[in-house]
Length: 405
Image (cartoon, rainbow, N blue to C red; front, top):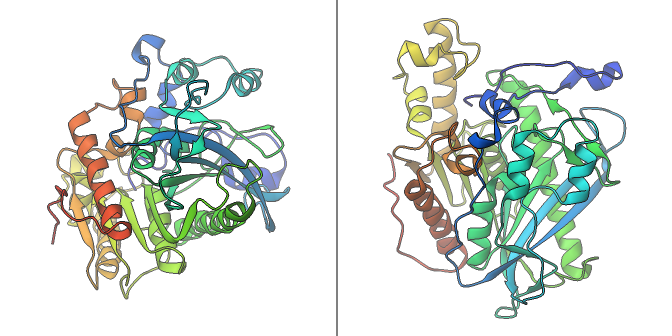
């Protein structure tokens, strides 16, 4: 996966804690820079208006998996947080949900570090989601989509995508994977949690293990959804989740998580990977369920060995490739994995003019670093919606995807 391993910074703490965690952007050096660049380079975030007929509610959940020890710190149980967007009934006295952190959380974060420009920009963003909203009564239940963010990213960095899907009648469950985001997160006890797992994008066995850890997060989240569907402690989603219609999607490494979840878990019926490499267990026999694989052109070119030396040898793009033999070896691995996935069909969409962060809100958060193309992003959202509508609502037509062979 591009832009996976960049600077490192050592954590202080016990040896077991130091073993697998770093602070610093592994997901993207540019995202790290966004923490420090002047505020004028980070304009007020303006999320596009969702196009669906529903208002949007949002709720946050923090769960503890007492069947798994935290694999990266070994000092407690694995924690899994989720932000859930859903079709809602609008009331005028509801409060808009914050984009990232509420005021109390921001206060906790800034006790230990200055108010970086990025945090100020995130706090100024206006979402289209409302806290404590009632689920829209139009349908008895709504199909469910699980979302896994890319490495170094947080779930709220896809809000324009999750709001769009919720506005069209989906309950979207964005899972926050502990120690896979550069930005601070909060434990179930409300404590600030920092640190990020160190990944080597071309250490395939290690990447498979880390991908599987996130797949297990998703499986656990599915179990929690079954629980709250019967008795939601927030009294919002009781009985509203259609757990017979479950899909998954994700960006970058999170897309690989979605594909692996589709392969491993019978509860999931369809999936979309939005760019990135096919990490995880080999799927040599293909997938028997519907899926779509979106790719930016340069990642497709990587697998076909058609990148120029100036690109594949650039450590800011593909770290660790020192020789043409290195490049060809890794390209062949990607190609072999892709052939296995597509053995029995599937849709591959090479998205024209896309870059790796076209599938995120980073083009809205830091447009000087990540050039926006709103028409392109609208097209990505439209085809994401069309794919799941076709699988779960029987709605056909409207796709602009020109599938690759």
